[in-house]
Length: 121
Length: 108
Image 1: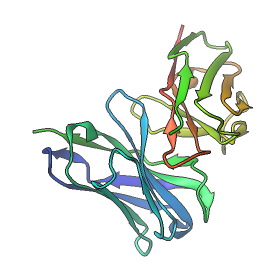
Image 2: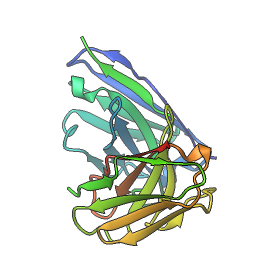
Image 3: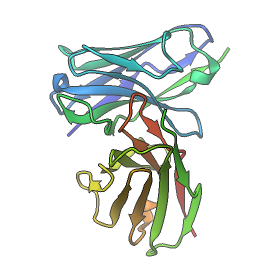
């Protein structure tokens, strides 16, 4: 059974950094692409970033490009999101999600429970 | 970027009735479309992928149809646990993956 457990959320001041982590279990982590998706309070879903199963390719939403970095450690079954220069509009629940496709990327997602990031002074 | 538009924003349905949710893409996404269910305080759950294929353990009362730019999610007989927000999402032309704004299915 796929398990994804996010951590690292909290309250952070504008302009400060924060790193989110996602611990994966129940599947062979190094064979699946991974995503981060966020949801502002009371709003819809916004895709944030993707990393290929081997870390060879990464992609970002325009809204976070240049500020956020997705990475993974396949030896530890861990996914990360380094968030720099945070803004109030980055306030959201951040979900770690596994792509459904083995050794590829379909864009269909299995989701963790999320971690809340609040950017406020 | 492909824009996904869902309608209606809110759907009021009585238990046991049929619910029909719509999703429109700003350009063709072929059949590369998913539906997710999200209950309050929970993460989204994949219901349908490739426009019409039910995900693992999803009951048969959920069905998806459509291709190109027009898609439908049908819940044949609403159960109490089906009251939730439903999102469509395209995976044809990405990144970025894009989601619709959601349809809230509420008890009438």
